[in-house]
Length: 113
Image (cartoon, rainbow, N blue to C red; front, side):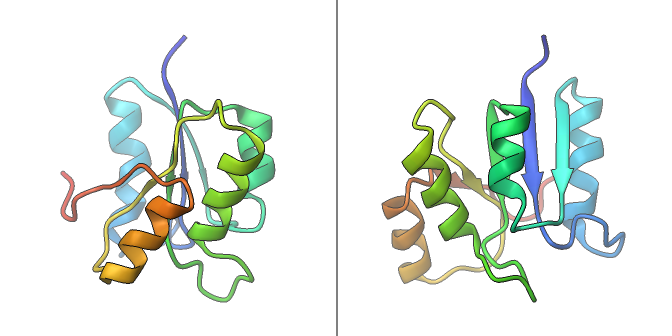
């Protein structure tokens, strides 16, 4: 059974955004991928698909949740799921501290290839 990764980003379907390439790159490397642009539905998708790893956007534009809130919900209700990883983008010291305080595990480096 392949390692399953859930990638949640509001720009996942935007072919002009670098993040849109991540699911195909991970599939090519042999991972099972679940991808969504729906920040509100991420928590339910985590419970439904039971991923081994969650890669989250921090800001879901025009949506009532952010990655920190999603991370906190995941870790608060299901500590057996690997701590979410936040995808790359410039972040402030506050955001970095806040993400780890809410159960995040790390940040991916920008410019993945």
